[in-house]
Amino acid sequence: MSLIGVIGAGVMGVGVAQNLAQTGHDVVLVDKDETTLSDALAAVARNTRMSRLMGGPALDVDEVLARITTAVGAAGAAKCDLVIENVTEDWETKRQVYETLDAACGPDTVFVVNTSAIPITKVGSVTARPDKVIGVHFMNPVPAKPAVELIPGVHTSEETVRRTRDLLTAMGKRSVDVKDSCGFISNRVLMLTVNEAAYLVHEGVADAESVDEVFRSCFGHPMGPLETADLIGVDTILYSVEVLYEHYADSKYRPCPLLKQMTDAGLHGRKSGRGFYTYATN
Amino acid sequence: MSHPTAQEQILDFVRGRYPQAEIDAAQDIFALGFVNSLFAMELVMHVEKTFGVTIPNEELRIDNFRTATAMAGLVARLSPTVAAA
Image (tube, rainbow over all chains, first blue to last red; front, top):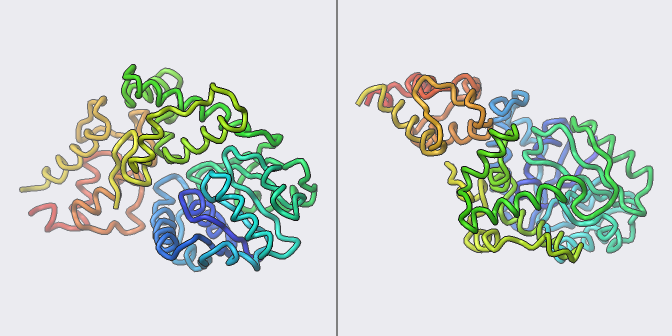
């Protein structure tokens, strides 16, 4: 089995690495420091242990962890046949990572951009292999979600699409094809909804519980937009809204000041123990 | 303190997270319609931290977390001294 690189050991990278490892893939998980990596492995262990409780298969934590090695710096993915990048939704951060990966990896390595908003063609343009760059928008929590958005860029080859689809199938994922457009299907709609929900709280029209209650009880959604924001990460929501705002130059994507303040305050949602709600952490 | 104390403590935690709902010890919280499986993970962490127990993998079943009574029962099985203290 080939080696898969997972760049970025945040919420998404942890989920992608776990999903790959529990479906029998060898993974090298990469981030910029050892502390983040050891926290990430602890998160993989915790989430793997909870798999059955969350409706997934019963998993052996040691078996899953045994398939994951770690490395500091993107060049640690040099030997990988395919790399899934999950770094912060910030263009400058992503650009630097892709320049490093492009120089370090072999010419046949496929780069999968796990992004909720950044155009895939733009990512391809900073590499010497735009035919081998493709977008996959994984949903959180990755191992529990049955589908992803699959986004070829303008120059992405059929071969790259095939290799990526094969890997996704092996990970137990269906893919929904979407043309390359900032925010794809999911986040053009979701980020505006979350942003507007944050405005309701910001303006004092309703509290977070009431906003979410309307979505759950009136619309039948399993989660409201602000619970969803806490799950995704309030900081990630802000970055995504900012990416949409910048890309479309359309004021309808103006980020809610409350999202900015919460991001500055470290109220990033579930991962930080507090966001629109407060969570038990360990 | 006796068994109901663990149950009360757990109930307080659940009520604190879902103040809009009326929840008693026998209420299946996952049947309420707005509690999702992510909360199950929080319950595991809360129970382990509060009662100083490690829940073995075979006990990590949703049925053990459906009600405050079931969770208190789990705590009692794992750590009779804590539950009865």
